Image (cartoon, rainbow, N blue to C red; front, side, top):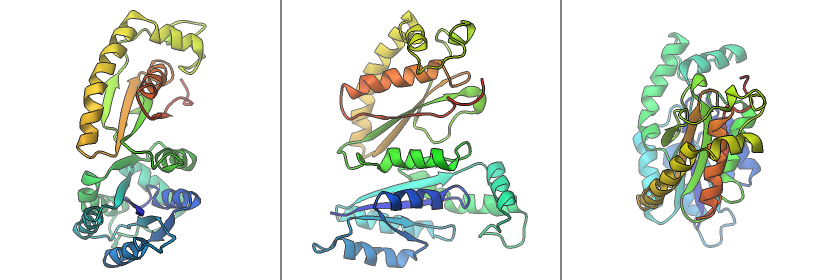
Length: 285
């Protein structure tokens, strides 16, 4: 049985980069194909003699949302694995990207660039609302986006069950918009106020012990273990393929990193190894 991925999202948010990564992973990538032709390609891939078992469709700004959704449901109806990725970014960031490349926005009809972006955002909102994975690339460079796609579709992407990703972040850099659950870790002891720990991060043993071995952290982790024991099977039973859990602290370098790493270790004991992303680890304190 073939696997299918549909990559969509805002122009300038990273569709081409995501497609390139999947192509490097061995996926057969088709860009800007009319939706009406996609089922015909899928039908060929589903033939017993087909040697192509991983196909990625890249759907651009002019895709009709209802047509694409019907195509996806049709593939799922015959038992195919279909996952959708939506690439998003803030309007300010998209404007900056277009201005730096001097490219014309494909949806522009002569109005201001911001108006074209917002029009595209409204048009694609139905696809965003049903996407399996939403990746906000506002704070990601091409290398970080590549790592995110590899995390989702690398060697272990066919592992049965729901794929879980844990991410740390700093509230002062903004709350991520592409996550399912957010936990605020700012109630935990802060290594920033300990001189010898301040230059280190949550990846270092001394910081990890300072945070995780505190009584507050122990109580929090114990209760979070119990909560996830209930939530993860429930999400999986609902057919959710990807779940992203975010942990935030002030700067995204100490507490949230240590807690993310500790939760990854605990979840690994109960099933497949979750992915871990530290969004703000290398940013200036």
